[in-house]
Every structure is written in structure tokens, then in C-alpha cells.
Length: 132
Image (cartoon, rainbow, N blue to C red; front, side, top):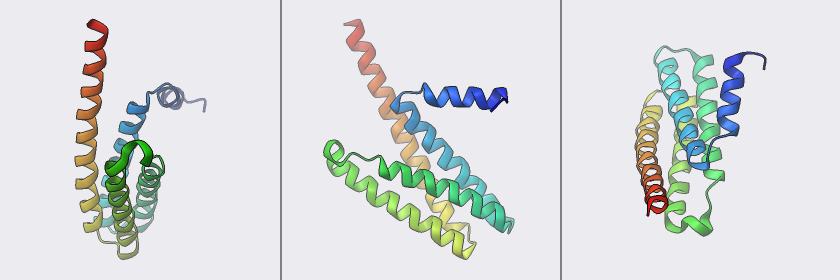
């Protein structure tokens, strides 16, 4: 880990807030899903498998971090969505088709946009509390 960029990334992750970590996980899942789509379209089996595996692991981790006691119905719905996405990743990995990945990409981007808005709302609320 002597590479300066690696040190920067490591510091960025270890000093990030929970909200920022969540967004970073989504960004990673989106990035690897896009790479998986590209590899599937180019019939690059090795790259497809690597990138699907990384995206799959991130979505699994998102699922594992759900707090059903706090999240209630939202956590339950997210869990079902994450499970659907893991099935789609598996389907894409087995079939080599980019279509299940494209479905997941749309879902991930929609969820990411929703979380960005939620985090902004939280930050705005915290700023207003400090100001008031």
C-alpha cells in the first residue's frame, strides 16, 4: 500500500461517515455493474465474472447491513430488492447476458439517487439545528 492513491482511498474510507460509506458502496456497485455490462457485451468472460462478483459482494454487504429493527418496512423492501439483484447477478454470470445487469444498474442508480437525496435532507436538517 505504498501507492499514494491507495493510501488516499484507504483514508477516505476509514474517515467516512456512515452515510458517505453507504453512497460509496452504491458507487462501487454501479461501477462494477457497468463494467460487467461492458464485458458481457464484449464476450469477455473473465472480466464479466470479476466485475459481477464485485458488484454481487457489495449488494450482499448492503443487505447484511440492513437494520430491520430501525428500518422496519423499508429494510424489508430493500432486502427483497437486494435479493432480487443478487439473483440477477447470478443469472448474468451464468448466461453471459448483459440484460440482468442492465436491470440491476437501473435499480442501483435509482436507489443511489434516493440515498443522495436522503443524505442531503439529513445534512440540511443538522445544519438547521446548529443554526437555530
